[in-house]
Each structure stands twice: as C-alpha cells, then as structure tokens.
Length: 615
Ligand code: M6R
Image 1: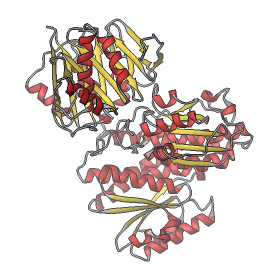
Image 2: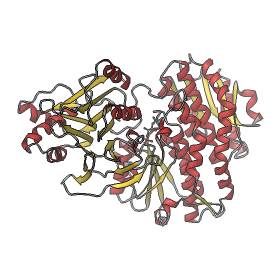
Image 3: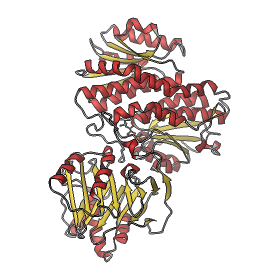
Image 4: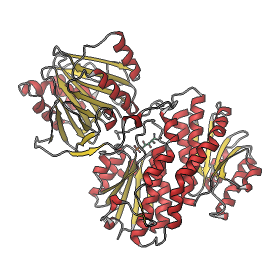
C-alpha cells in the first residue's frame, strides 16, 4: 500500500520519479505526488488526487522546475480521503522540507496534539503530515542536521512506516527509514535510489540492498549509509534483481493481468527449475535445514486472500506426502487469538509481495512463540522472508496486476515442491518419480488450457456480462480453486460471487439456486477417485434440477458430466494434486473477460492495492 521512490544523482529527477511511480502504481492509486529540489535550490511539489495520469497531466500543463534530488509517492488512502490535500508529499519548515510515507503511524493523534499545542497548523487529515511537522521541529532543534533530526523523529513514531524525507537546504540527500513496511536501495553509478520495491528503479539498476527492520538509510549520489534507529552503522544485505525492466512492462498486452495469466507456464517452470535432482524434489534453499521438518507434529500455513487459497491446496499436498497434520489459518485471525503453537510447530507463510502486514505479524508472532518458520515468497529482499528461518522463493517474476494469477500458480507449485521435499526428508516419500513427472508436465498442460479454452471462456464471459451473481463449487483440491474463482470475479468485475465446498451446498447455499443462476463446478478426475467424482456429479444434478446454469470444468474425456452441463471447459489429464493448476486458468480468464466486457480496469480495481501493508 502506497508506493515510494527517491532519487539522488546527476540527472533531472522528475522523469525518473514518474517512471518509478508508474511501476509502483499497483501499490495504490488514490493519488500521486512528487517533490523535487530544483537546480536553484528550491523545493517544489505537485500532488493530485486520482491516478498517476492526473499528476502527469498537471505537470504537462504547467511544469515544475526540475532538479536532481526528488521523492515521489502513489497513495492508497488510510488517514484522510483521497484528496489533493491529503496526497503526499507533505511539507514542513516553511515548505522547505518534504516527507512521504507508507504505513500507519499509530500514535499520530498524540503527536498531532503535541504539535498543535506548540502552534503548528495542519493542512491535511493525514498521519504523515504529523511526521513532517515533527521533522520540521527536530530539524530546527538539531541545527539543520537532517539525519539526526530524522533519527529523533523515527524513534518517536509507533506503528508501521516507511518514511522518506529531503530538505531544500541539503540537496543531494534523501533519508529514509522503515519499520514493518518495505524499503529497498538501488545502487547506481554516481546516483542512488530508494523504492518500496525494486520495480521503482529496476530500469536503472539491478543492484540492490535490502534494509532491515528499524533501520535508517541516507543516500547521496556517491554514498549509501545505513544505521539502526540508534545511529549505529549496520550492513545492508546486497542482492541482484533477477528480472529486468521489460518483465514489468505490459509489452503489447491489453493489461498486466492478461500478460500475467499468459505467463503462467513460465512462472511454474521457473519455480520448478533447479529443484529436481535424481528424480526427487530437492530444494537447494533448504539444504542443511532438515531439522525444520523433523520432530514437528503440526504445520500451520498462514496467508491472506489468494495466497490462503494456495495454502489450502498446500494442506492437501503436505498431508498426503509428508504425513503431518496441516492447518490453514488466515494470518489476521491466527495472530489475534491464542493458537496452540510451539517448537514442534512449523509455520509456513505464503506471500507474493512478502510485505502483507497481516502475514508479517503472524510470522513474527509464531517466532516469538518458538515455532519454526518458513516463508514462500515471490519478492526478493522482502520483509517476510527476512523474518523467517527459511524461504522458498517462487519465481513468477514481477506481478503487477492487483489480481494475483501467476503468483498463485507459482505458490501452489512451490507448496507441491515443499510437500515432496518434506516427504523425502521425513522418509514418507521414497519414490517421487510419478509426481516429479507430473510437475514437469505442468507448464505444457497450462499452456494447452490457455490455447484451447481461452476463446471459449471469453465468449462465455461475454454472454454473461449482465450476470449479477456467480457461484463456484469444488471438492477436495477443487474447493480452494472454487474460492479463488469467486475472489477473482469479485475483485475485478465487482460481481457477487461465492465459492463453496460442493458437499456444503445442501447445508444451506443451495437456497441461492434459482432459474438461470450460473454455477461453475470443478469436477475432479474420476481416475483419482470414482467416489469423489460421483459425488460432484450428484451435486451438479441437484443444482441443475433447481434451474442452475451449470458450467463444468472437467478433464478431457469425462463423459459422465456431459448430460448435466450447459457448458464444459476441458482441462488435460493430471494427477489429483496437480489439477488445481489447470482448473484455475479458465476461472482467471473468465473473471478478466467479464470485467473487460463491463469496461472495467482489470489491473487496478477499485478500493484495492496489491500489497496490503496495513493491518
Ligand atoms: O502479497 P500477498 O500474497 O501476501 O497478498 C495477499 C493478498 O492480499 C492477495 O493475494 C489478494 O487477495 C489478491 N489481490 C488476490 O488477487
């Protein structure tokens, strides 16, 4: 939530900031703003409610003097509505000082009252302006030493924040700090960058430094210094960004979501690559960490949203292969009760961004309680892997569309790999050859679903563009896919949608069925379990008898569903644990096509942000 970019160097900064914001816009698009110290040494600022394009238009209409020190922000509103005045940057010290912020400053009311008592007046309703005003005061108290003043300020803030600041009297210097909110450094030649994530600067440099919790960074064109909140120097962790700027471009696709759906074969292949050895799954990052998996009596997988549905698939896989009980817990629920966990619990967190605050807090909580922690994450240098004992990276590449697609497939793939890896370590999987073969065939099978069913599903969506409600049913590993199908539709097409376990239908939801109600049913292969298959076919008959319009997703050759389906979407034959990766694809296409048919922006749905860095 909220994207942040900072630049110091020899070049005019405005284009660099705007390009960075364009790549970060997925983090929030309620407003955008930039502040620049121009070549005459004055600080200028422009900010606008609405998407980045509004700010761009404003700058095109009347230019802001450019300069080589600047900060930029794209906002997802928390404190104060999405207005020009609440947009960032916020200014202080007679508008010579600019601050941008991501997160929530929890003690902002007390600080605001303290500053008002001293005569400070505020223009906005934001917590950020309080931090700016506090920095203005401390800047004066510290004789114009921005770094010391900034340190004093961050030590007074409670909550979660990434904060960047610059002062017109100190051109060529941007300071930043982070607590439970992301910030990474980009290292250039004679220039340096700060960003919420590497997308902010990847077109300029792929050399980066990850900053730890409660650390402060100061960048100048030639130097980067990192300290803790007490001012003690610390080493930042260097890493190379594994993808280039082109990977985060739309590249001729109608939307990022369309591109990312199409990239799923590659995302899955990249997540598997390098993790199969001698017919077994061996995850190199877990080398020497067998102790994580031995002696545990329980696994808890924690995540939010789409990642939690990947977790549900992971539960089936890990239980089957590693023979250990697995619970899936929504991170925000897990954290705020009193779960029974300890040294014999492995808590696996799943997060595309690696920054989801709910998930991060769950991981920290699990660690405090002595649990072993492992994260499955798509973003290098992110906070959640840094807070975990081990990490298995998904290699989906940058996911820009708010609706998660290729990251979901990569998460399921990583969990299948983890289940087989754990099974090998625990001695419960001795021959993984059939499952490894299934894994390796996945990219090709996903590509086949895309090529053979895309046009069919788009046509269906087109016909159904006036639909007010869609239901999704699944059993076994099809259940999480039903949940995911419903979430995709809700978040980008704003249509009421619900996913159910097919067996649960008769316990209530069947009352929703009336004539013409569209219902997607995910039918598991009869080759895996004739019993489960027959139960789902019975469920189809029950809803058909009540007038539902049934759209079935079934494996090629499943003749048993044909008499009862209004539409059949075929997926290739696959093992039980691998079917979700095929069945989800038509549901993603359906949501995307329906939202497009309604004229909606599939990449930036209303009210949402990609990376949810507030609780
Ligand atoms: O970055 P994360 O995987 O931790 O994000 C978790 C959810 O916020 C995310 O999956 C969300 O549900 C997506 N918008 C779904 O498409």
